[in-house]
Length: 590
Image 1: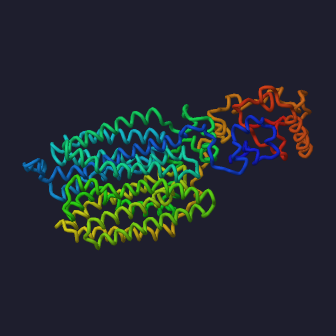
Image 2: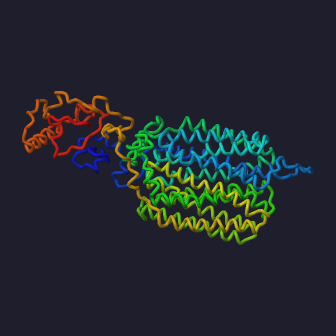
Image 3: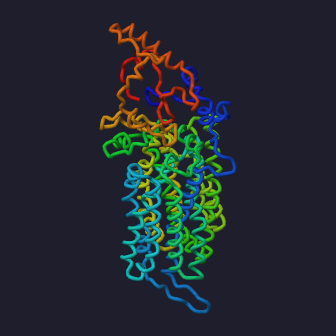
């Protein structure tokens, strides 16, 4: 809590909060909090809280964007292979080698790598909701250009894919910038799991949808479809989502106060836009918990990109499945992942709320169990030749990954540094993008003969990568806010007391109250009479100050509900220090 400011909660200030009218305290804190039942937002019943609307819209945005990512993996099978249409055999429109296809897949991540950190930085410097929406919009527009680019030359297609990667690279880190303003600490796992569910729901529905559209309408129409989805969503997002609760005219007063109070110091400091000089880059780059997130994210993304870009080819080459069937089957693991995410997120929040475990141990437990089970499933897949066993094990493995994504490393950045979570996840995403670049190339190199045995080697290598990440995360991770997360003093020398009051929605100090010159009527002992000249003796001055303050605060509350007639609802309350001659012929900044 900022110095010289009291909490308006009567529980925190038993003596000094008595002068607040009951209507104020009842409005700020519901009875459920005073009864000891915390963490419940006093929102109007019958309506979804706005923070959940934000999470659901972000979820839909991720669904569309991950549908865009998976679309090429399905369509390329029809683009480079001959297929039958009735009794006719239709030749492939493009004659690209396996290596060329791998480069086209990987080119997306070349651009993706470059804007991950930039996206996190932009989400700190500018409204994160705008960065998120612009990223999805640009990616959707570029996706509609893919058929034309492919017809021109595969080099043009590679260029368009790089541009898509540049735009989509900002999506993930900026989403954490959105949550940093909207997610109360004890709802982080739940809201993050809702948002992240969209990524895997997009894969779940995107793969079979792309397969059906490609099979019956032709592969170009799948690109046009997702482009239209993305443009429509971007308009809805721009109209409905604001940077923070205090700037959103549609959020309820109660929910706004609940979110701002729960975020506390971070919400105050977040009103100041960060600069490159203020960002503690050295501390971030030397923090062990940050490296725990980086290593684990890179390992998990290897397995994710393996399934995103190569699972249709895996089922076709290892088990001779058709395009439509492979699209349906490859979406099954992500169905179980999408179902597991909100459940695991709620369990993680419940364990933290009930103090079953510390935040650090909750993150370690969910991360270790989730990735270890996934690694075990991948090891068994590498040794089996059954399509049913492979599909079952992939589903179990991705479901267990839901533990990791909902309450493991994927939420950890908001724990260790809410202020710089978008930068941490941008840095993590940039390094993890190396998996997206290398994975298709490595897979294409290993599976030259397109045999089930060669695909088995791919899954065994992935299992080893996961086990290594589990060990690193267990020993390096932390769930506590890091010291460098707190903002440094402002370089312009501005007084913190000039900040906007975050406990009263959208209220600002009037100009005269920021740097006031005390009027004569203010220099009184509380009874309307001029006070005595300032004593020269320090002890006498303190005693006189206490008497003046007691008289001032003993005045009755006036009819408009204000405790003192010169205070209105837009002025911050200042902690009264009995050892300081406050207000006794002494000018003080509020």
